[in-house]
Image 1: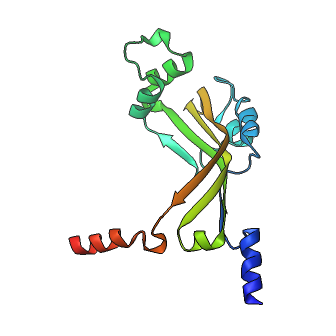
Image 2: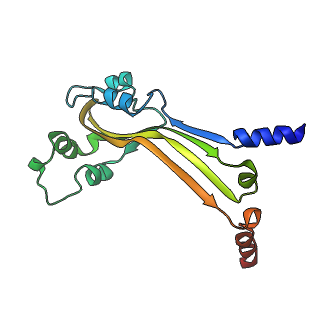
Length: 183
């Protein structure tokens, strides 16, 4: 009976692990995050409005960018004069320490191992199907009002990761032995 369960699990792939990663998953997909983000209007939207739109500046998945990095990221070309920059970027740079920038990374990724259980379990061959999306955004704020916003990311991230180890479970032994000998 155990052999039948093992073979049945091998055929269905249920014995292989699955994983998923979600960062601020209140958005169903890239387009939902983009639509919410496009409601942010420079010089009108407040920090409280950002929270209502799903882009809270106090959550754990937000990175606060310091002033030197703000200048490096928003105005990386020093040969441009201030009047050539977007007004929000210009005002943020001129405000110096009064301007804060927030970087958001919103993502959802699913990883499903496929293939044969025995080859995967013995570390000979592993195939993982990865599907998901990632939404990256930056918002510059001064005195509680958004000055600048921009976004990017990967609306559809689909890839297959393959790992082949000809030595199977012994593949990493050489690295382990070498590491022990080097100590």
